[in-house]
Image 1 (cartoon, rainbow, N blue to C red):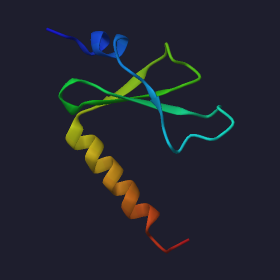
Image 2: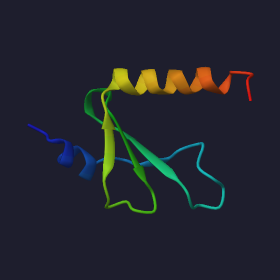
Image 3: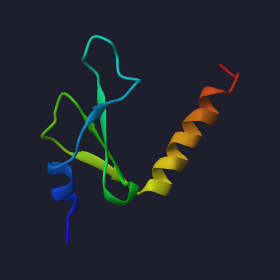
Image 4: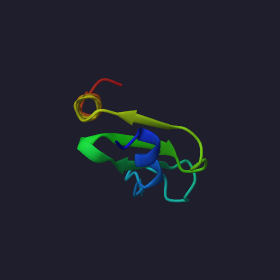
Length: 73
């Protein structure tokens, strides 16, 4: 049985499209088995990662879309 630690060790990490162009302040993500998503700080790749089940990640991204389209300041 694969553990989360195993999945993170073998994960292919990609930079978020919302990371800045200078290469610092970057967020990286990885798609894991079963649609689970891992997120980490690229400045600390050996540090902790947040791991979200697919439905939770989908809800989070959907909420960000709603907030981004809100015309209020």
